[in-house]
Length: 352
Image: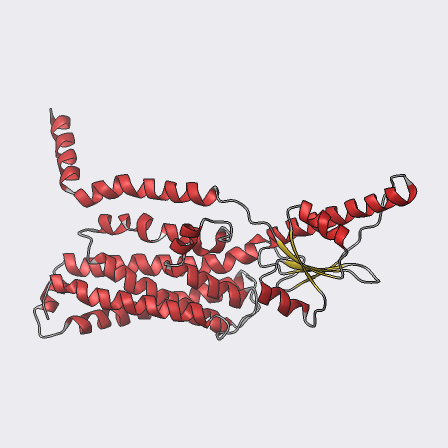
């Protein structure tokens, strides 16, 4: 009977806590649905530029599911690859063919390189058959060059900037959200709001207070990742620190905003599958190009998408802050929106 009574009490508490019950059911369905759509996205055909290619090799490349765009003359191959959004450029001349790979995704670059080599080998075999009527091994040596990274670049070089941004975002979100929640559940916030202090001053004070520790945490994470773990860094270390601080400000303002809608630490933790985990799927770990349009649009409303894009640009591609300014402006806009919503959300506790 005692066990029955305890089970009854637990069930009643769960039924009364509608938010926990809803998140218990909705959160796993949401994550599973996202993973279903993300991992069932079709691979995009690689886009290859061509200089000095004859029609036969173009045909063979296109039969290998490579979209080929030919050019008559190119002054700066690397700039053309970036500006045209190509995955690489195949240059045929009198000497050894040269393949210049964009290499933002080393796995995709290796797959493209393999396809190009197979297509050139097939075309050389066909020419040999037409000339001699026999088959033989043909030399398909290609010299390689890279716009970003090098031949030794691997997937972790792309993943590591994203992981730094994610861990900074996640822990700042969690600590700031639970910290403000404790202020409210202990009655400190209520007593504070009974004084003449305004809601904007309360939010500013909490942002500065928790922000100091977010800065310390961010600087330690970045310095440890780059100086101790020797994670790839082509751009400026201080640019990486600045981007992570901006990302931490977004996490801080989002964490304090969502804590306003949580009644306990348990409910605050339940926001993680809704507000944090989906962001990691759209941070560039999975290529967005092959996703459906609505999934790509969904990714662009998530702060970590822009933080990861800026970090990857600086750490892997050597970009300056000017080059990633678009992502930085969006992050700043996210933090301003969350801070304003935060001030508005406190209205439920006091009108002023």
